[in-house]
Amino acid sequence: MQNFETERLRRWRLILGQDGANSAGSAAEDCDGLGIALEGTDLAMDQALAALYGSDPGNRKGSLGSSAPKVSRWLGDIRTYFPSSVVRIMQQDALERLNLRQMLLEPEMLEAVEPDVHLVANLVALGSIMPNQTKETARLVVRRVVEELERKLASPMRQAVMGSLNRASRNRRPRHNEIDWHRTIRANLKHYQPEYRTIIPETRIGYGRKRSALRDIVLCVDQSGSMATSVVYASIFAAVLASLPAVQTRLVVFDTAVVDLTELLQDPVEVLFGTQLGGGTDINQALGYCQGLIRQPQETILVLISDLYEGGNQEEMLKRVAMLLGSGVQMVALLALNDDGAPSFDHNVAAQFASWGIPAFACTPELFPELMAAAISRQDISQWASTHDIVTRR
Image (tube, rainbow, N blue to C red; front, side, top):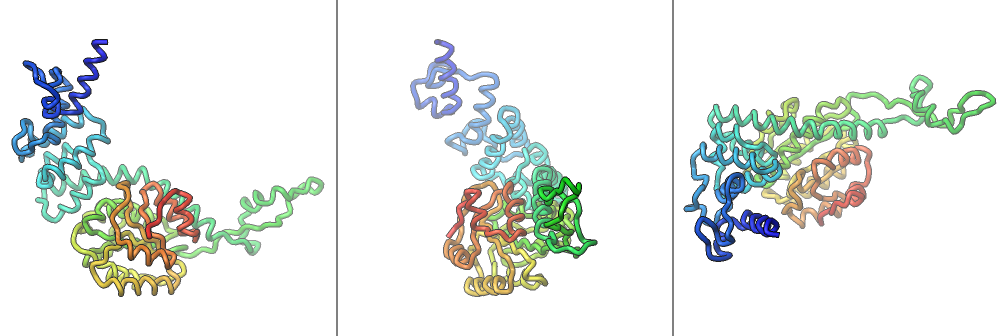
């Protein structure tokens, strides 16, 4: 019973921290207000947490201060005592609570950090002001994250898109030399005639007609500060799509200026450092540029990734969207492409898009391959979203 009570108090002590524990009662000698004296690993964990979450950041003992060595030691401590998922949360909190963005300019700090997509977004945003030595370290950190995400996301993307393209291009009225005999036989096994030991090919399936690209995909990505993690995922997916010869992929990023990063798609790290996160938003200008890229409107999917807050001419932007739809372009609006939950967005623009059959919703990276497959197959995207419990925004 005594051990149970001691363990319970120990856990409360770690949850409350020293300030909270002291306020819970009168501290005994060498103990806090709960009568618990932490030591060893528990004490180290408590100090790591207190450095970040203590009530008085300016005076607390164990503060991270402003030196890179202290930050590096702290990063090493939290990686020792907490799982990676908790480490990432603590790092993000440190950036926000302690204004540690300046510390990202220190190579020794970058070498100690647990990389994740939020860190990549911060490094990309700071890319233009980093000294050269730090920039090389930053690229290594970014590449680690990008390669990890590519391993996770590339295969589902290729499988979903190629499967959808194969179904979309299949020829149901083939000439004799266009027949795909393996698929045709499988499709007609129910018509097997035992007495003749043959199959009647009632349904004939042919190979798709070949051309350089079956569909054109344009990713138009808002690179304003609120869209930072979406830019990271969009760049990776664009690089994967660009590796598929059956689609022609363009990547366009924008704030108040428009940058076409298509030529860099062989290396998503170069793509990311080609962005300039932050700044304003001119969706109309970006869509105007994308409109000039479109050669086959009926075969083009335009994915606009933006919170829809237009800093330019909203009326002209809506007119341009209507023109794109009228020409036959298939348009998808993503309010975010990340795991961060429901974003802030312009409800009026989203409602107008919805009235034109363009549902606006946030999409996780795991579902994006399925979304692209649905778009390639010309499925109703609103219906697709509802089957995946995605709330479309109006």
